[in-house]
Length: 244
Ligand code: ZN
Image 1 (tube, rainbow, N blue to C red):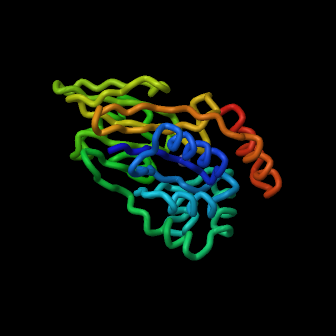
Image 2: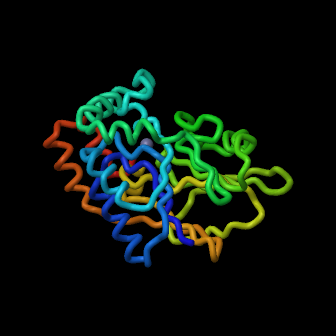
């Protein structure tokens, strides 16, 4: 069985399409695991939901998914995110809104727990340090956990002695699952923030027990032009160029 692990699409259709094409070029997957924030920031929220729903997928809820669908308030969003969230809410069809509202905060599948933020704070916590990872290993029961939200590809591990460590998840390096417990972030499809502007996602092969991260170039200008046309905040347009 092969799974694609995607997160933080953020309504960036060009990036999402490039990732789906790349998955096809690599022989396809049986299922997509999505870690939330399908919408928010980007120009094509409805199109991204529609395209995701054409695939065999499961998805947890991100803060933007619940914010745009009105399931949570937007007080905790920063000004650009709040503006994009309100704009997104106006673009969604009733069916899109229902889909986003219905996304669960946590899913367990195979030996994995899927969340957007962190296992102890599925919607809001940015899991970015080894110290935070150490505390979060106590908050899920499966051996592995997949998170998004920070838009930075990372791998945290906890060995049998309880020692934790963290590292960047680098592209095309095989991450082989062994005895250690792991928390893995596949980076962001639609708004990378690790200084690399290419779309980020991972493929998990259950037969080889290997997860590999891939970075995919896409037509950044196409997304930016659309955002400018639609009057989305310029800071959100600019950040796609430098991946921050
Ligand atoms: Zn996000």
